[in-house]
Length: 193
Image (cartoon, rainbow, N blue to C red; front, side, top):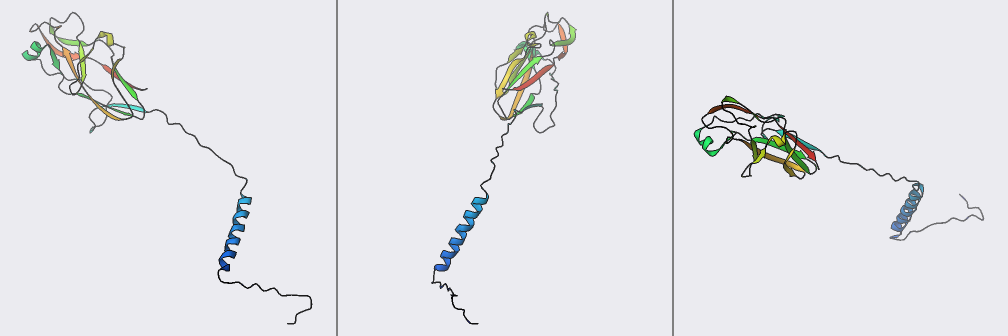
C-alpha cells in the first residue's frame, strides 16, 4: 500500500512502565464517568420502635407454665399451733420475662376463707407471703382485696421468683377447731415501667 501525500502515520511507542500509566488513566476516566452517571441518588432512612414486652408465668422452669397455682398447706400439728402459723408445703414459682424494667404486684380477689369445724376466727385469716430464700413475710390482709401490693421489680431479662405462703393461726382458738381448708385467690400482675 502506498502512502498518499499529506497522510502521516502516527506510531506510539511505549516504553517500559508506561502501560501501567495508560491503564490508570483509563481507570480514572471510567470512575469519573461512573460518578457523573450516579449523581441522582436518594437517601432513605429507616426507623423502628421496639415495644415493651413483659410476660409472667407460674410454675417451675422445667414444667409447662400455668396461670393458676393451688396453695397446699399440710395438716396442722401442735408445733404449728405453738408457732402461730402454718406454711404451705411447696413454693409458688413465678417467671418474669421482659425487655424493659417491670413491677410485679399481688392482690386478693376475695377475703381469705377457712373451712373447718369448731370455733373460727372473728375475722378473715391472714395470708402472708415471702420471697425465698430468707425474705420477711408480708401480709395479704383484707386491705389487699382488689388493692395491688408490691411484690418485686427488676430490669430486662429472665427472672425467677419463689414465693412461700403461710396462714396466721393466732386468730383461731387452738384445739377448739379443725381447719380443713384455707382458700385464697391471689392475682399476680406484672407491668412494664
